[in-house]
Image 1 (tube, helix red, strand yellow):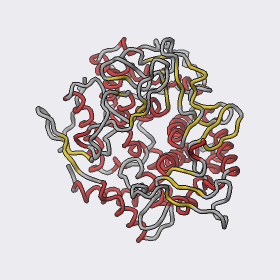
Image 2: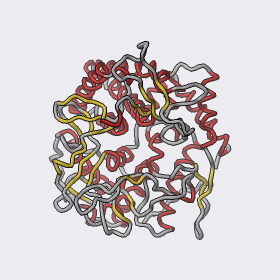
Image 3: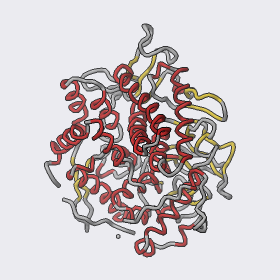
Image 4: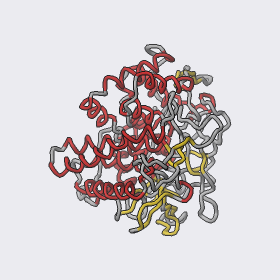
Length: 488
């Protein structure tokens, strides 16, 4: 059942202060306090969500700084950085000088949004292009895909020690569709210099279309979650090169209907597979697509797609591919956020859950990563760690109902030590006893991408140009109607 209501601890207009990302100042506005959340209430946000949204974007944008979130010399992302738990300032020794294709995806998505009005975004794209090209020439065995990588200053990009001769599918799937949107954004400007850069990225994406199968696909619908490479320094087609799925436990394939699905759709639409293999891709993951109802006393039942943990992170792909152009899928996406918000209110939780870095200890170090955080009642994995909440759990709520998302974001960001000169912090404990003195792409820029509506409009337009939109809509709609019928 679909009802158009949400629980608010209840569409703001769009304003992007580009200066916070690329050095253009917004002279007509007085900068808000970095700890602005305490100046708002739930009622004031509902009454005027635009003002609060502007402040959120202003300070979250401060994360986009050299040696905080990215490397200005090569345009590449860093995972994030520790900050001083008292002053909130960047801890130079706490910079995570590593990153992954998933962080690149978030950066690409942001750049796609601002490229038409901000020349600085093109500079970042040019630097990224040069870095990607050099990496691919140095390590051709990755087939153009990115492992987790390390870099700092002018030091060339290289795989991290634990990703030598290894490459993940899921993160690269997210990045491929972000690049797809970037190409459309560049081409839509009509500028010759932008079109030239778009051609470079189009060539890179076309190369990935040719390498995705040998690197990741093992036939019969099976996509390696992680591929082991014989030699990352040898070309894909070298006689001594080989690719095998890592592990042998039976769960070493990408069969999820969550964020891993975007890689599957890249293969389906661009991999040159015959109809039999396309059907195999869909059939292999069908058992994981399940309908389930969220129920709590005093609340109406809400039909949702069963999650793995039902972490907000799992719906990343819905900010990229135009799933919600299909009415049934739009209702499913909306219901997920209704269930997420209603669940937190029902259990009297001050925030919501997503896979996230834990709090930092007395030495300022991250205690660990919490993957198993979501809504156990509507998840495959019911053993979860539910003592830490994160503002970025609102990433999809922002897309579905921006005002509701902002209210929940506020309720977490207003906690002690949850705001600094780089915007919101990673997470806070439910009981308020600790926070994470860390800022990251996942913890911050997923939220901003949600506020900006994701990149579905750009992807949709390019899909139509490429003649694949109707096929995507037909296939996605058919797969979900198998489980949910034609409507909720």
